[in-house]
Image 1 (tube, helix red, strand yellow):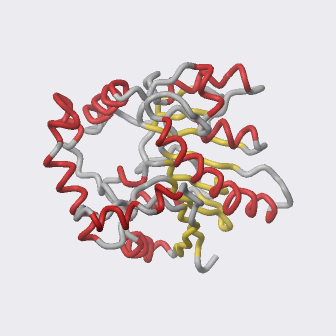
Image 2 (cartoon, helix red, strand yellow):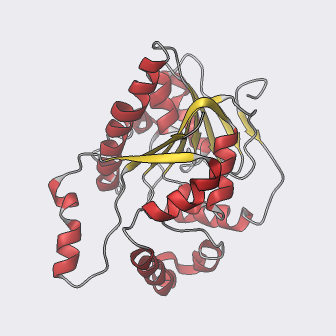
Length: 280
């Protein structure tokens, strides 16, 4: 861990700079920036332009705490977990985990005050000490080997450029009993379904992203996951996965049937996935 708390850069600027800047600008246009007084309420937000998405993320969060965090804490005799939040954004998950008594570190490439790490300053009045914040990529985590109980990809794993490399870096920093969790990344039943989403996104790029489209679509991110894709990327790392299904609202759960009736592509699922080492 770093020698003192704060917002620290880790690693040189990379080819991801243009994407990072464009992504921050796009998020600002979408209204992702929130008043500081709203931040401690996340993910339980019932107002603002992204309220419907936060309702879904709140379901994911409850499942994650109940099925992953609390069982791990019990196994450690209720000792605080050391958790790294990968793709932390404004730090809402770190704030929640810190309030639960755990030691959390927020990692993200973005440091802007919209909903990047810079926005996390809004939590400072509500905590004895603000959690660590590090500007770094998933490929080069500034953490010691075997130092983390739980690595959480927080709505972020689908931005990986190389899935095996990114999972391997997360596995490197885990303790032997550690876990990896994937939250709020789009899963499809097949590669064909995922590729249909990618084609649609790129076809509508200019309409969706305007003048930011070129930069936002330039990086070859994996864009989506499937159970088979996750298993294949993890095999050489000795990771085995299990799925936890959040209890989403009925209208959200029936989306696959609605899409089928309307002749549309299959929608994604946002389950909680948990990995452990098979042989440690």
